[in-house]
Length: 107
Length: 121
Image (cartoon, rainbow over all chains, first blue to last red; front, side, top):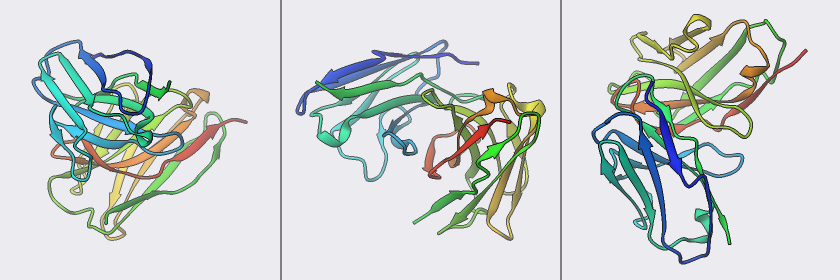
């Protein structure tokens, strides 16, 4: 299985901050990397697919980049509704695997 | 708007079989290019793909669970189902049904609300 790591595991930030989360994979996955946001008690929500494509309806302050084994999710200006846990997922091969998550909370 | 809704079995005893059904509304499960899957999340932990099915009935399972998992589809009812046998406390989790794009390991663009299944005697 492809192993996923995320850093940091958690971070504290303020409204308006620029936030960057990193996802690394144990082998190259080209650009088959997706990002999800999950709020407590809710299902995850797809934000970014194919490393950098913005899912319909997702605000443009979210962006993704990377290829191979290193990927980033950036929130350009953190909003109150963005406090949540973020997961990456590789869709390069089966079994699909998810990162352990990065929790973003209020400083 | 597509919606997915899991049934609610709640509590399952150890060694028994967990059974869940996902009802899809607002779209057809027979739409091409989409796969229908199950993903679980133990309390306070990360996400694990269980398996997926295409409307034709082709199934794909996580090797870590394959010996215990069966996923089936009923296109006439617009539903797909999960059976997980010989459950233990380690199977306690929120179970999500999901739609995946393009392949059975593609991104998930629609999720059910999730249902907590507790394995306990």
